[in-house]
Image (tube, rainbow, N blue to C red; front, top):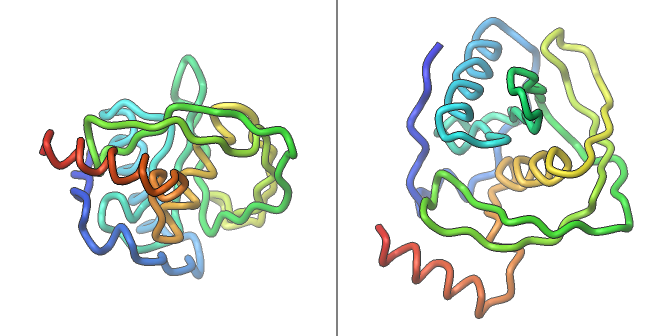
Length: 164
């Protein structure tokens, strides 16, 4: 497969809610493969399809140390979130050179269609929980910096603009 180019912020597709995936086809599997190649090339721990201009509810997450254990998710939906929060430095290839500390639930249970087209459910903890929540935000047309207060968000976007 192939690594794809990530859309540069402020491309309007990054603010568009992605469409549900009706069924898992060979085309969907090929998009997932490209997404994994793109995620590995960054390198990163997750990627959502809108980041590469595909407005479908597809995401990949791989927080493993050894890599090669990417979870492929279609139509992911958070069923449960832990009360305990975890702060993590988040960034995006769509806005390179900047990052921000974001607090999110430490663990989440997610329902999704897996690569066989079956409804699956999985618990994500730590970095993978952060990543899957980050990807679901992308699928809903949100960026990680939307979770910051106005002053921090404005500072981050100004810094990104200077770098760009």
